[in-house]
Amino acid sequence: MTREELKIKITDLLPSATFEEGGEWLNVQIDPASWLPFAEQLKKSPDLLFDYLFCVTCIDWKTHLTMVYHLSSTTFRHTIVVKAKLDRNTPEIETVAHLWRTAEFNEREAYEMFGVNFLHHPDLRLLILPEGWEGKNPMRKDFEDPVNMIKL
Amino acid sequence: MYRETSIVNESTPTPFSGNGESDMIINVGPQHPSTHGVLHLIITLNGETVKKVEPHLGYIHRSIEKMCESLTYRQFIYVTSRMDYLSAHINNHGCALCVEKGMQLEVPPRAQVIRVLMDELTRLASHQLWWGALAMDVGALTPFFLAFREREMINDIMEETCGTRLTMNYMVPGGVMSDIHPDFQKKVHAFIDHFKKKIHEYDELITDNIIFQNRTKGVGYISKEDAISYGMSGPSARGSGVQCDIRKLYPYEVYDKLQFDEIIEAGGDSFSRYMVRIKEMKQSMSVIEQLIDNIPEGDFQAKTKAVLKLPKGEFYSRVETARGELGVYLISEGGTTPYRIKFRSPGYCNLSALDHMARGQKIGDLVAIMGTLDLVIPDIDR
Image (cartoon, chains in turn purple, yellow):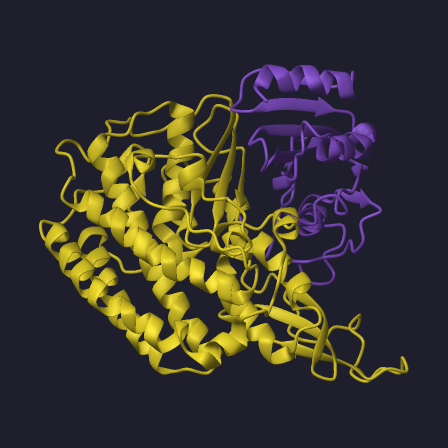
């Protein structure tokens, strides 16, 4: 589907979604509460079939966090970017690990690096950081490490 | 002190914990020859059968993404050579492409061809090391020396042109760091002639070896749907029949003008992943042969300002490394350093499928499965 067709289709699926101009792919901004049903439709709609979640990440904007999901379809070769704005103090969003298995590891990374709480995640615990780092989120902008040099 | 040194942490059940079954927990790594780096696997075994594999990461995590936030657009590329050190050129290439996309910079044709040549030489060197190491994992020592015989020739070529043998830092925004060495073409020809005569040894020693086939055929199966769901890419995914070569799907530089095949094997087992890489080496040689005598004259680098600035926005570039799809997701606030950068590394997603592939297999086969996934740990621990 082309960018315009995708835009029409997604507006049908989720009327509350807004679109960002520019960028290489269609940027869809959603409310985190609508993410799980929306993700299911993206994966299962026969004319969308977004089966390849190739990039999951989080961005700290100092006032809020943004979860960014890059999705692509191996059947139709179309790509979209889904963004969900999260509250910085209590970041919460539903997990999609049961839809795309790659999300399990990537969400664990976002959990420890940014402190995003993925609801109903099968195994949400530290993956890269050692024990004792719960609650400290090194990739957040206000994180300062007195011992290890992270900033060059 | 932040780093815990104890290997078994308290949350890990002790071996023979009284659950009524004879499950045994075994730690492989973080220092173990078969993990090819500092990877720690906690394996739950029932007899010899693997019930669960749980990777523990972070032993060599350097927080490259965070470091990049305080480095300029010229500097941050150097750090990325240290991610997947066997594909250092291709990592640099992905980052350079991302900065060029942001600046809308045109790369001179000569630089494009040099970049592709270097990428393919890197891919060959990486696959050769993988082949030697995989053979060693399944119990054959000789191939490692044969692989290094060819790999040394590539490293010598790299050293002459780039100055280093492993972390080249040769690709910069706008082109390449310096022009190729006067002997470059001659030496690449000599390497191709040599490797063409020797590649049959790879098949004779390992591919056609019945012991190797028994160790890998039907071992570590993953279906096409699962491979996509786990976000696998590169030769590991193509061994399951997934069409995912970035060079074909989203061509960059001069790849769309070249004649080469995307190797796809439908088997989904360790042997299919092995065959993909063996056949890819022949394709890489063909790409090098098409380009080596046709390097256009001209500049090797576009003219850029001393300080690079990217406009506000988001840029995503993807390249095919020796291990799969590397994505560089760069968010710029208009300054001289990235606001946030995310490296979508191929090894991280490929590793996440290890548990799925290894369940129900024998512990000895786990090593063969890991070997055919071609894990490079610094690529996973960014």
